[in-house]
Image 1 (cartoon, helix red, strand yellow):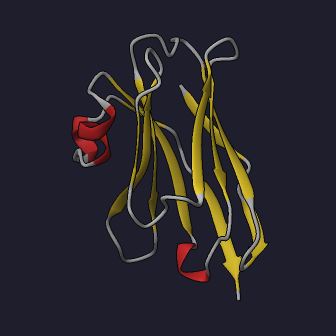
Image 2 (cartoon, rainbow, N blue to C red):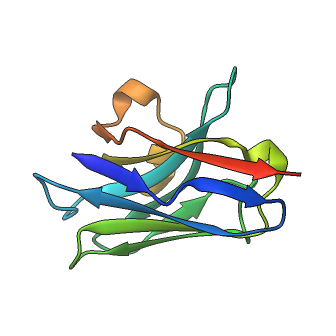
Length: 125
């Protein structure tokens, strides 16, 4: 129901824009979030946004470099990632939840309603 795209290989310092398209439900009244999981590590919340009022929250690790946005007309969310670092190589996931963005950013995996299948981002040094 959530499908990510836009991942790939990029050099350190480069940029990528990830997309997350929803099917079978609309973003109305959902918070949409982006998370990542590197090999051997837990899932990390990056940014979450309310589709209804635009409230946004970011993890300190990506603040100022990543930007989340939602196009409600297209039922699609985006994550613009700039100044990427090799240690940010991971599988990136989008998710949808009815909780507020600040809560969603730190929620457990099974507390979030919908997850995409993930898209691989590899940052080379």
